[in-house]
Length: 465
Image: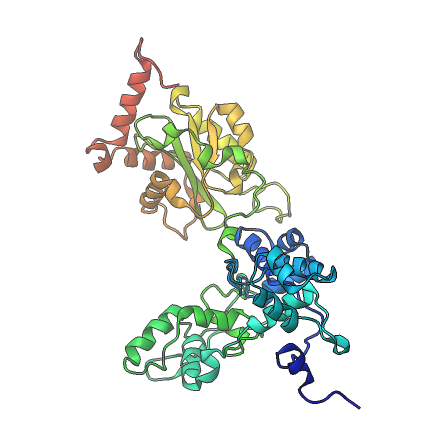
């Protein structure tokens, strides 16, 4: 004889729950995992930090599309925490009554009574309270999955899919196939290879255009975030995952912002980041602080640019090819013969900086390029302290970025910069330094730089060292 119908509901006050197997990882642990990811940790490192395997962390990251699928805000005190459930289980095992447990935990007796009845394990037809099972049941019941809008609205889904992945057409409607590409393999867009041509509207463009084309139809509304989630998060089911190839980035997973800003770069240590740069460098009143970068041309050609923050005076650094360039195949980890490897860059910068008085070469702020990975040697040879801007932060070198834009008039993108000699670069720098600037009250950088030289050469005038 089996048990009578409805026995479990009568026993626990809750309808039978179909067990999905072993209780999953607690949401609090998953929440802590995503907090580490948002802070910039890899999925493997974040998993180890919260006490789960690296494989579990990688699965959470992949299933979440690279972004947290749960709120990172801890639940309020209205709900029992796992620590409270552990205390309840311990007190229950010690045969304390409901009111005594409630008094010790600091909860209402009714809350404890319902907890012991509803969330207890029921194997064998008896109520046995265990904290892990109770937490699992609570989290399972708290999930109220809502069908995605793109699943229930066929018309909206077709509109979104056509704007993402529709065919490229001529004005008369003729389809243009574009290049042939291999089938999507579940990874990011291929590097330096053809991508399939599609209409490729961004999710935000699609979301905003719906309001224009269907102003009176509220069913034709969706946020751009909902479109992204349908593409990135497994189990949403509305849009095919391969449609991520139609996104401009082509990423198969989202990339946490902190992680993109924390790329390991061995040559940039904590003592040479821009936040450690002397405060006087930010003040253009004191000369001797420089900003630098490369402008890149075709065939691995480049020109180094140095700009003094106070006078806007420009130095162009000639970076000629090294002996053997083009005569032998490139080898991985071999010497950089293009002219702007770390060793060649140090030599060229030392040659340019040492033409200046010591008082006018205090600091140099560079971007994070590997061409300055030997900056410690540069500091020893020139006495110029080197600092690196934050990743993806060109505004931290504004004078240099502006000057590079001016230089593109003479050295356009897509041209070979190795054809220009040191004399050619000197002529361009001279021209630029003799243009009047609004920021200098219409003086030229050359005039202001000459005033700086004169001030440090006058006897009895204190230097700014």
